[in-house]
Amino acid sequence: MRDSLKADPAAVRATVDELLDRRLLVMDGAHLGPTDAGRELLASVGTRTAPISARIWGGIPAEDLAAAGRVLALVTERADAELAALNA
Image (cartoon, rainbow, N blue to C red; front, side, top):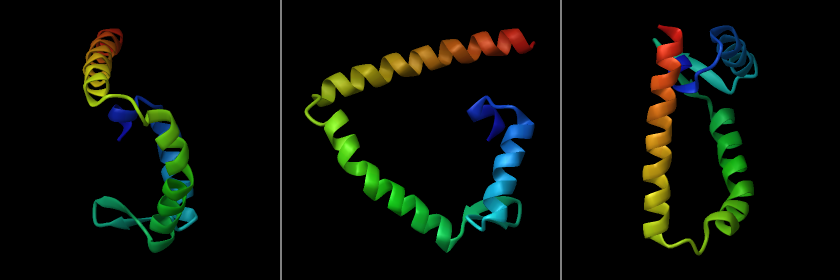
C-alpha cells in the first residue's frame, strides 16, 4: 500500500490504525478488509458522488478517455521512475 500511495509509512499506519479503531477495517489474517460499516460508508460515498462523477465524465467520447488514460499512465510511469531515482 505504501508504495502505491507514495506516502510516509507512519502516515499510512496512522490512517490504517484510525480505520481499525473506527471499525471500518478489520484484519483478516495478514490482510485488511472492510467491515460491514466500512462497506456501508463506501457505498454511501459512492452514491453521493455518482451524480457529480457523471457530470464530470459524462459526454466525453470513449476514445478521448482512452487517450487520456494512456497519457496519465505514461506520466505516472515517468514520475515513478524519477521518484525511484531520487530514492536510490
